[in-house]
Length: 169
Image 1: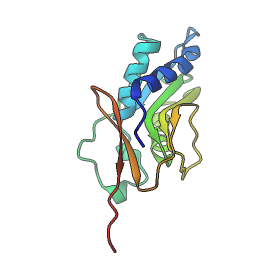
Image 2: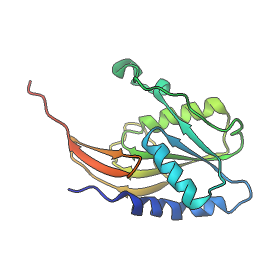
Image 3: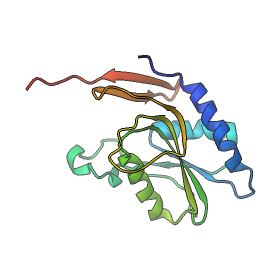
Image 4: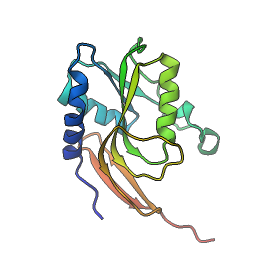
């Protein structure tokens, strides 16, 4: 199976997001590092170049921190100072277990209380461990359990499917 092309999926997401930017109170677009941040930047250019843009690095909010350890390139998150009563467009590249999105929402609520969070995902893999569903999806893919899909970039953005090596027992 070859992965889908990224740009048509981003265009599909942009079209679905357009109605959210018709009110005077524009949403804040927030991308989850790194792939979600790349997509968020492109969506902002297509839909509302004057919208506020934020980035989340959820490393300290992950529930598997003790198993995976500290990621060597932890950077601070950057959100507008006042997110209270605002709509947040939360963007990520791949939704699978739901744990990354849960961690991102925990961090968002440390910044304030948004009115609404709209989850925008480039690729939905299914296989949830936590009951989190995207509001806007570029494409849904069913992959074998030993396959992994990753967004590479930032220029050009490209989806790559890799098969994980199985270890002999």
